[in-house]
Image (tube, rainbow, N blue to C red):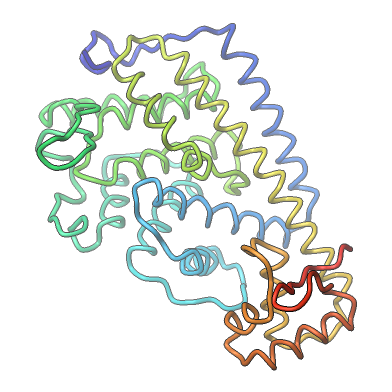
Length: 362
């Protein structure tokens, strides 16, 4: 028996002795992050929000196996929020759709959620009316059975079966009435309930996971009472995707005591907030660097490499990698690198073919 087949299935119960301490820790970290961000100044807040929202969009799509171009996502978000960035690039239609949905959820978090608003999100996710090669019903509730499966065709394993299509309109009305009403429940716990509740109904032909996470972000924005997002739940879910699917499956096959789900959700949230601490540290480090070198002369290639080194540079910086990234010859890249070493910004590690370069600590 699935959870939605039980009588009064949305009357969830939980063990307060287990959940209350975790919730208290989440609320403490939440307040700490918001306090730190308010002290950073407008420009650094913008930068952190842009980084968080970009991560949220990219990772939410990755959970569903879709790889989006991070630079397109970043450029789309920056343009819509009026944030000026260097090197903005045009975004493809599928990128624009996911960005549009997330920003609608988080920037208009205090407005009611309706079936029409959800239809708009769904249409934005599937602008061609297709999911991959398959035509799907868009901007409307599904009209067919819905199973979550894995495995090769003909040998699929059914992990979950959602409520029948004819029940979806009534189930969604109850959900939306609840979501839009004020309850005597902590807003963070409400985000956990909303996540489980919506994904269990699975009201659309496709895109249910991404819309579930947008609803979660919307409710977390309500919990923060802020349009600014400083932590990414989707990024942490992606990092722990196997456990995420396992806890969802066991909860949907369990009884109405959802203590294990709430525990996982709150711990996931705490991990995402810990990641925010690292993001803030990176942001401050980058800001201090450019403040220190505000009169230092860098050419555009050097600026690009330094931005990468101060952010999420993968691997070691070599002369050939510098040349490839900046699209110049190895000789030109070496001249740029030697200039940065002369300015005390890069140091050489290793020797011969094993030479690489690192930022000097500052």
